[in-house]
Length: 312
Image 1 (tube, rainbow, N blue to C red):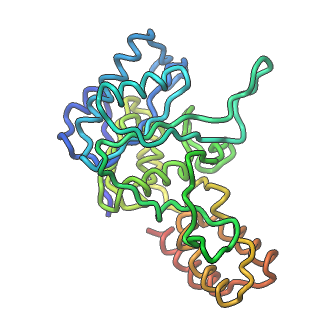
Image 2: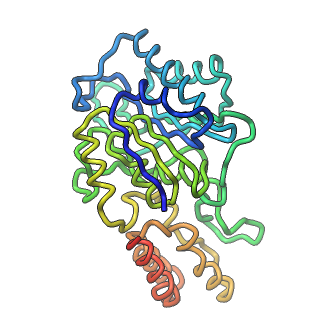
Image 3: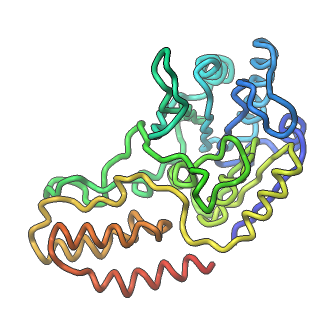
């Protein structure tokens, strides 16, 4: 069973106490310095002060990562290029990906284009890093014999809906990230039993995802109210993550061969929907609409499996 720890306090101070090369993956969503209220006053720093803050916590992050470790950092447009420079030129880390998280709803603007994405930097500690592509593939759009039917690389543009205020998993936090988004990072860049660290735990999404994916996790959070929120969130039963890449629900076209189609359908839920029980009925309906058949073997075997997972 995964060990989930919540450390209450300042990230810069607590990171200094983490042993060097002991963390396999870091997922960080630091304050963007845009004036959002995180319960400790509005987070506004001077430009140089914010860069110094970023440099110090990133230096500690680099120190504690294992040689096979990776870091994902969410950051707004004003500072992201500076963080890139710190990690590549100052810390000598290896750039991997600049991920664009596209969401369908955001802030409206009348003068200029409304923002519809966040940026995420992915860097590796060394050139020998953990990356589990099979764990994060997305279903192919068409069946072709030459394709890998385990799925395609999801690419660096990720579409996940915000956790809307009507969602039952919505927490009282201004920048809650969707669980499916964090799930992809954890699956891709760590293995079961590894240790993940989130230095700005916020609403606790990283901890909740690691709890379900059998990764040990340390979350650092300054605000005691959010610490209580996280503890409460971790105590709740699991029924599936609160978001999903919509491509995971699609059924490939041209699966005309009955035997081949049945073999593929037996695998689809285990490959793509294992932690997303809410998508199972939609997937089953798509199969019925596209191929005119029921999928009773999935209704019985896989549904039971998903129920067991949800009761863990």
